Structure formats: C-alpha cells, structure tokens
Image 1 (cartoon, rainbow, N blue to C red):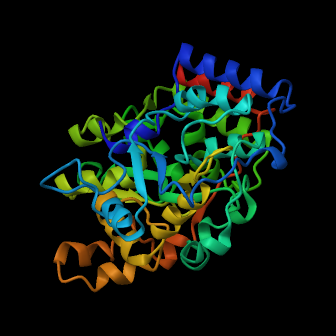
Image 2: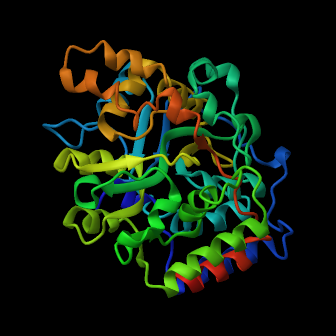
Image 3: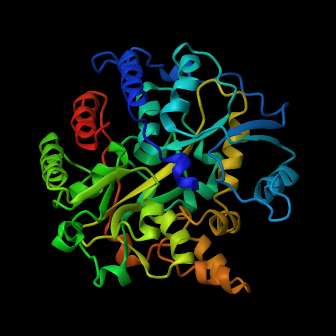
Length: 394
C-alpha cells in the first residue's frame, strides 16, 4: 500500500455511516454544538521551559535515512539546531478515524496530548469550523510568510491560512497508459470515449472524487453549487449503468493501471511519480478544464502545551533547503516553490531532475489549470454522501 493509500482513504460501509453520524452529533442540524470560542482555545504555553513537542503525522510522510529507517534527517537536524525534542508519531491512517480519536477531547475542552497534527484540508475545514485549532503567530514564521506557494495561501475554509499550513500538496487528475491506449488524454470527457468502456476507474471517496468530475463539466470548483453536484452525479450514474466505469477504487487503482486491467483512471500525482519509475508509458494529465490542487496541512490543536515550539518547527520546514530535502523523499507537490532552485543546483542528477518534474513543481501552464475546491459544508454532506455512496455502491 502506498503512502497516499494510507492517508487518503474514505470510510466505507458501516464506517462511512458512522463518520456521518459522528459529524451529525457534533454539528446538530448545522449548528456547531461543540464549537469552541477563540478565547477558550489556548493553554499556558510551556515552550520556554519545556523544550519539546509532540507531532502526529501519517506513515511514510517524512524523510528517513536509507541505512537506518528510525532516523529522520530533517527532524534530527531541527532537534540539534534548537534543542527541542520532537516526539514524532505515525498514528494517522485515516482522516475520519483520527477525527474520532481526538474529537472527544476537543469537544470537551481537554488536551489532546498533541502539539501538531497533519490532516487533509477537507478535514481541516471541519476542525476550523468547530474552533478546535489555534491561529498561528506568523510573526514567528517568516519562512511561511515568505515561501508558501501563492496557490495554497487562502483556501475557502481558512482564509489567509491563519490556522493551517500545508505540509505537502498534490493534484487529483487523470493517469493513463499511453502505449496501451494508443492516444493522448487531454480532457475529462476523454474518459467516456467508447474505446475505454469497462477500462476506467474513479475514486470512491466523495471528497477525493467530486472536484475533478465537476471541472469536466466546466464548473468553477471554488464556487460550485448543489445543482452542479447533482448534474455531475447524473453523468456518473449514466456511465455506471452503461458499464463504462469498471469500478470505484481507493488507491488500488495503482495495481489496476500497472497490470493493464485499467487504461485510464482518476489518480493522485504523487502515486504516478512512483508508477512512472516502473513504467514510463504511464502518464499523468491535468485536463485542459483543470484539476484539483489539494493539501494535507499542519494544525495546532486547542490547548496544545507547546505552541511556540510547534510554530518554530513549521517554519523550519518552510526553509527552502529543508523543503527540498523533504520533497526529494516524498515526491508530492512541494508547497515551497523556492525549493526548486535548491534541487536544480544539486550535483546529484536525480535530485536536479526532480526540479524539472511538474508533478513536484508544477510549471506555469499547469499552475494555471489548478484550483482548490470549495469544501462540502456540514449541511450539505448528509445529502451529498447519500447520493454519492449510492453510485459507488457503499
């Protein structure tokens, strides 16, 4: 299972119903019953006398030493430079699962035991709405202020990125085998061509799938409406009934595409970098109508005891040299464009080549077609999830 498979999994079956139920219990008819006022989010910051912090992340989402996988070079360098001890845990395997794990503490105004977490932006939106995370002090984060990619600076759920900072980013687009298909794919509508009947897969997760499919209908995903959503679902339903769509997948599309069982699929940019290393005929395309740019972001939960230490660690990873080392290992879209120059000047040919990879550093043409989707609101989610899950067969 790839890194993305562990991170970007949507709950299925009973799990999906449970997630919706938990959300309903928290928000209750759209009213955030568990909302925490800004004045109640901070605890006494012990950063000055306690040189430590706890950082919860996803598995395989930080650089490790090739000779000793327990060592994390960039994190080790931060500890050596600052004297701050970082307790790093790889405990996040699913957004909803992690939400369920820490929500009881947050809604009851209790410490989570974590100073820093990384979750997908669609889940970050839920935390921001509920007031479960603290705003950061940008005066303590000059690298973030200077180097954060302009495309990622102001998502709809967190204008100005006051409460979140991207850890890594990525693109949801289309992957296909050009040699086996015998032609290029340039549009979302190309997925519905007759020669792809039964050889196409879409992502099963609502939050992962909907934006690209709407873009194929010419929708501005920053301003989409319920009518746009249902029109997109109508189109997908037609292709499900016509057996054009082979199935809906998690990250197991990787296996289908590699084997040739599938010729084209909805896919994540980071996965395709790995696939192309084994099969150069596999291509990733940002359709001419556009593709979704997403991020998984760092946040500081309410009542974190080492907020200043956490802010310092975030800013450290926005130094271009550090961001470059992380990008070279994880191979997702780097949220620090200045890291490209660092890699381009590397003596190692593979590192220098990475600077020219548009799936790590999108070029201007690709950047012009990327957009961040408006997230699904709590009021919309039950209806939309029922419609989508019926299509997917959950």
